[in-house]
Image (tube, rainbow, N blue to C red):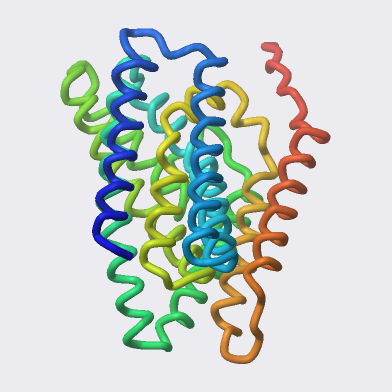
Length: 304
């Protein structure tokens, strides 16, 4: 792609981040739910327009690749909000501090996504067998996600969790206790935790998108477009995100699907349109199941 397209894309991205910071989320109170919803829907509409522009410029196949990458990254970003929710609760951050941490998280994610995508595409173009490694990593990540979701966790034993979210939560709680009583250090430690989490999230999401396309411009723009509204999406879903209790299984199914697609790509070719349909169906089933079968309410333990 011409360098002008790269520059134009980043100008729009920085403008949207600036609008989110300077207009939508000023002061100590979060933007209203309606405002966050409108901003998130506007970003989705902009992504759709960008996909239509790609279809006009480079054909329908490229647009479908962008849509698939965008949907994969967006769904994994929603899952990442679970970790952010636990993180901010552990650090005891207020609304203003949460917004600052998320801003640094988004900016750091843009930089790290760019580096990881550049390296991943270069490796795939030079060493074809790398896609089998990426596919295996996705299958392992899917297995760990299901295992961690099925493993019962008591509040008293949260520190004994191993792997995945358990280790992240344990590290977060240790940092929160270490800097307790020092607001500036707590915020700094929370920002570092967000950046570390961004690196771990990229290890799952980048191989998943590379299973759809190796086009550097499509992979990068779909990832950045999906994480742009992460801050508004967090405040929009913070109150109801725990209701999506089956979302993890849907995401595990998606990662297993794209992992198998990468491993079997030499023998089985799955059209991008089919992949997009499978991803949408898995997300729809996981979301609908979560809403139809909510978690039973926990009854308070009666003291004897």
